[in-house]
Length: 464
Image 1 (tube, helix red, strand yellow):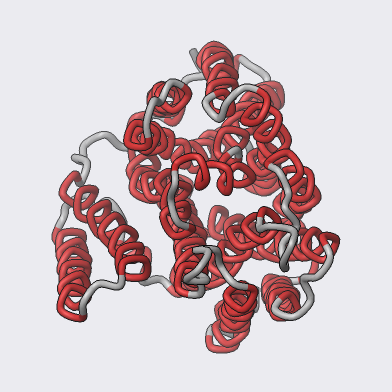
Image 2 (image 1 turned 180 degrees about the vertical axis):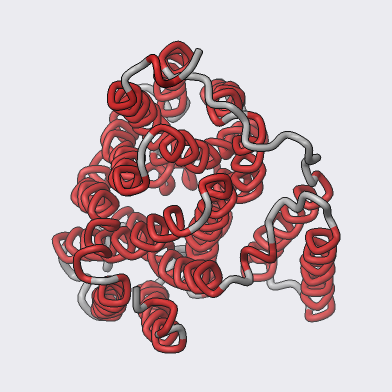
């Protein structure tokens, strides 16, 4: 049936509404781990670095699946692939909700990670059903609702994990995702594929997933177990070999998982580098704050429960949702360069201040809000600029690259934060010392300051 028969405005509104509510449910499922991570570490008997790996399992899968999802959506239709991915997410959520042990929980988290691929698929549908200018606002709205789902997840994680069990904080959002997937399948119009003559680059998928997994697991082992120098060198060689193999495969593939030629364009690599730096700094802060809130109150910590941690993190979730919705608008009004510089300054100043100012809970709450605003505005401005700067047929690939970078940055930052806490643990208690947290916050500040240098180097690319 021709789209001309149906009102384009009505299709656009219904499509964005359905995608937005689904994004809200996905954001809820993704965010429940953050406030409950200290509780999971206690109940499962794992270190902070291992706890960071629990949260990063989902992110690693997302980083691998996202570019594949975008390409599948470009070639076979965004709606069809979106429904397929939601079926995998639902299976993962139910598996985590029924998990009897850590390995099963990690498997469930791995399956849930394909939810990250829903974002570029949503952008494909937005670009196909809305004009370019309206799509900028719509992309911001979808991103805001995905982030806003973090508010719901942050609030329900504590009551569910403490009142029932941590299994329920995975099960309930999954039920909502199943219901909304049915609505999306019924409501959204079918979008014709852009191209369907290329094969999926499965070798690239395997090599990238192997690179990320070996790096993350190896990072935990190196920082937690104190591996000998020879073993560390072997891990570095393996990661380098996998990464080099992935690049070689992508350069030769007829239909690469990641189009390295597109990545070589100044607008793309500028955006990817800046996104990686900003999100790495924010990922460290997002991991360290709940750990400090949960630390015993007889020292530097606050002895907060999972519910209390969720309440402390709620203002930051709200700030992140607002910042994601205005990132594209702010870039159009003030210019991309001004938005990036302002965000980097706020992020660096806040995290550096945290190294010495963390005696009161309100300081941590304010810091989470400021860093969420700074990171959200900057990365969304980069995302919307990229989404509208490429051809419509390449929207899924281009935005997928940035979403992958965003996910890797957060995962890397969290893993570094966990490693710093492990390295600075008190030998007598096994708990991180206050100096370890100060080191973590200072490191996050220095990483954020690096964004200013990147903006300076890429001045020409960030003028528009």
